[in-house]
Amino acid sequence: MTAAHDAAVDLFTRLTGRTPDGVWSAPGRVNLIGEHTDYNDGFVLPFAIPQRTVAAVGRRADRRIRVASTFADEPVEVELDDLDRVFPTPAGTTPAVAEWAAYPLGVAWALRAAAAGAATGLDIAIASDVPVGAGLSSSAAIEGATATALDDLWGTGLDAVSLARIGRTAENEAVGAPTGIMDQMASMLGESDAAIFLDCRSLATEVVPLGMADAGLAVLVMDTRVTHAHSTGGYRERRAACERGAALLGVPALRDVAVADLTRAERLMDDVTFRRVRHIVTENQRVQDTVATLRARGPRAIGDLLVASHASMRDDFEISTPELDAAVETALTSGAVGARMTGGGFGGAAIALVDRDAVPLLADAVRARFTAEGFVAPHLFEVSPSAGPRRDA
Image (cartoon, rainbow, N blue to C red; front, side, top):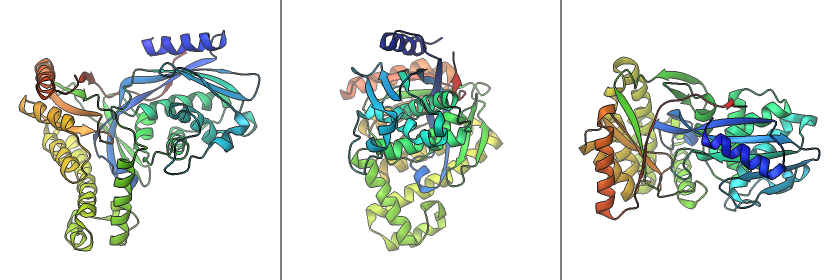
């Protein structure tokens, strides 16, 4: 068992004086390529990572839900029947409960309808080794662990895609973060040594083998420790610009715009809106090109696509930071096959695809660059494509 598992069980026992009915976990994710395309009905290529969020959960005799976490000082307790008064969270406002608690409570709120009369009170204790604010979807890991636990305990019998939808509802309507469904789908559907090619409009998925180990490659996460929050204005503004661009082009979403349409798009909109649109359109194409390249030539051939993705996020979508740019630049000059920021941006992490034997030298180079620039020391660690949610006990 992991340290997060032990911490969740210990917290539950201290909170309730008893052992949990079960322990469930769900992974964070790395997005190999495809950023901000999900809420534009586009394509993404994430994979689940070994780092997981753990929920130790037990039934209560009453109709209260109490959630506690190792990263919060006090538990939050709400009557099950009061959840409709707590949520939804209006756009542009903060949740009526502590934001961390809005994730598991939002899942309970969204899942309760499917449970019908089987919904009971619960104690939920949460611990995690998914870095928070690093763009590795710690929020979807909380949602996935909670949804999987409640699905078992309330007997809702929902499939993984339905539980991913529950997680997105919690994030969008309980937390008030205008995210797409990529994170939840990646966490719920993850498989070992594979990425999930997801069509965010139809929710159709394909498992794409990555073959990193066979190619002698590792994925190094370079967490800049610059934290971000999806519910803040920058993310919301980017989404609004995408919706504005789609409206000007007369399409339901930017998914329906091809690279060849960008010449017309540039004539119709202001510079900022056009550049936001150009990122989404070209990123969708890069995701499809990456899938085709992986299948035809393997992971060593996708480096240029990763680099182009980062440049687009830096210059067109403007969601990178000096720390992210420094991490990517240093990785590339230190021999990485490819590198890019990953996640929603405005902080968080970058990834580097690198020869396994070269990881220590590349990591040292990134640390030295951060020291020279006066940045906070980064958190560097390897990840491998991993499996989705599970019951651990």
